[in-house]
Length: 462
Ligand SMILES: [Zn+2]
Image (cartoon, rainbow, N blue to C red; front, side):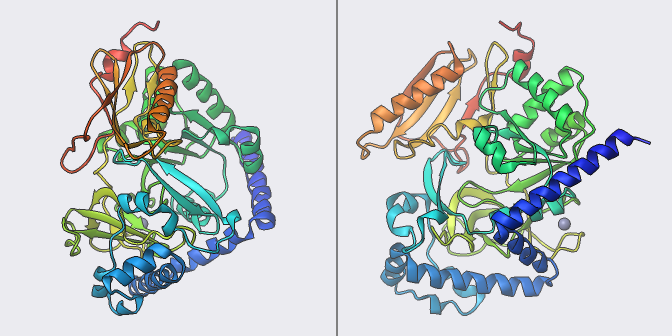
């Protein structure tokens, strides 16, 4: 029965095998990293805690020896990595803020790292403050992605579709890198009936097992499928990124796309922080590669399990640009106990500190809110913060806190404005300078839209 499907699956298996051999030849480290990560699954919770503590100490020493910023900061505070002997001592390690990263970008970088290992990461930031950091090609982020797929019951190498802003995945070079794995991206920056219809055709052709991307964008696509009575039965996992997903939104996507939605948490600066397994309880913190703390308002103490705290993260893998006790501005809660799946990793609740809307336009175009976070990616120094505000009449206000210390700021803001204007067509767009972006219970909403999406769907398309 179902010969067509099994033939398709065996072809997919063959292509996965070829992709794996490609990794073995070109990126053997990913395979050894993955095998190493799998051994951590067999640790007890206590062993994993101990291992995590050792790795924290190791990155402290590394940063002290290789980064001008950390050495000076520790010396100024009279702190030495040797002072960290037991868990409580970790509170002595200074916090790294986004502002520190902006102010001391050059000094944070580790010395004597070959340029081939370095890549640039820019982000609009979950809290509307653009930022540039550096990534390390030798870190285990690929292997963490593979382990995540294993936890979702998806082969580590399989065809997938995405909703995001990664045009390189659809470029010739991007496809060549992925070959023979098929990847198709729905551009979240401009979702129209046409682009959604074309994407539906691709999904039917590729029959991908995984759909990965912006929660807001996937939600919009799910709405398109429901409106047009389009059904799928190929997905095994839908994974949402970039912004928290509400329970209602999750149920809605699952019903529309006929597959479980897994929540994962990460940021551009440090990906794969925590994720749900197939049990879909708490998010498993990848504590063998990252450390997450939940700190009190003054950052002096850890808040109790279940209490809301400032999420503070240490990345063990990035030796290019060490991020130790880094705060990206999210709030979250640790959870007690372990997952029923038996994995030893500590758990946290889904992050609810980030809120993003989508932008809706009269002709039916939708721009996923997460896309707006990337507006200043090319010029992270141009503004100190920004927010996109759409009024009920569809007009858009780009609110910015200009960075007056940056010489080219005006010109760069104008370039961003022009690019954004192109995207939204004839809809009025104004740039408004403000002294600060107002916070909503400690969080900045980077996109706010007063347009009701259901109104848009009832609009005749023009
Ligand atoms: Zn689990």
